[in-house]
Amino acid sequence: MLELNKIHCGDAKDLLGSVADQSIDLVVTDPPYLVNYRDRDGRRVANDDNPNGVLPVFNPLARVMKRDSYLISFCGWSALPAFGAAWQSAGLRIVGHFVWHKPYASRTNYARYCHESAYILAKGNPKRPSRPINDVQEWVYSGNKFHPTEKAVEILTPLIRCFSKPGDTVLDPFAGSGSTCVASLLSGRQTQGFELDARHSAKASNRITGALRYIERREQSRMVA
Image (cartoon, rainbow, N blue to C red; front, side, top):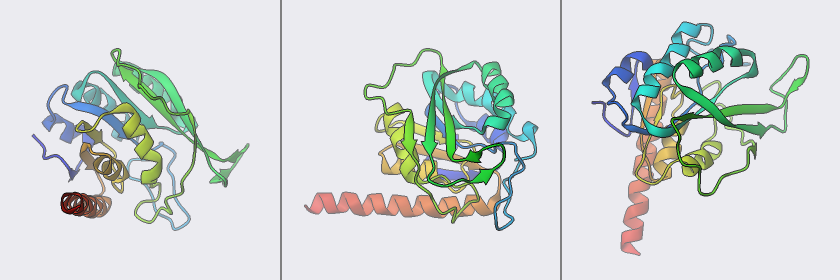
């Protein structure tokens, strides 16, 4: 079994083999969009040109998810047919969709790209959230300091709090800079993250260490008060 509240460096397909069946309460992930992305500084995302390095992860993900649970996956529109087929093959169905409005265009093609999307996927028939959040959210720009496609903790936190409860375990198989794991810890959840790129894995591990220290100091302050 893999240790909780850590980033594990390696291929998610392999690492998921060490995760017990039906042990994960929620998956929140931002996989490569399969668009061969390169940012303004020339940084790339591992496997962003390799569907076989991304799409086969969803079958073992479904195995480790608890019965009647959720997976929230960011996804770009251009590869949606491929992702949709992988989700369906894994026994996951789309039950909702989030859109974040950006105040800027990240790219211009046939239209100006001013949004990000994520899909709510269900395994089985999970209970609906007691306090659903709006399916259109305002974007918070991370600055992409730690990763070329880094998501801000602020946009992930509402997802985690809506679709899980304190003490639950939240998994991110494409952890990148670790934002999902940090948001999970700060929301009172347990977490696991998998990241293929050793450099990003190290950065994410440092962020988790910082989050755990912050939580420890916060609890100590509460005890003193």
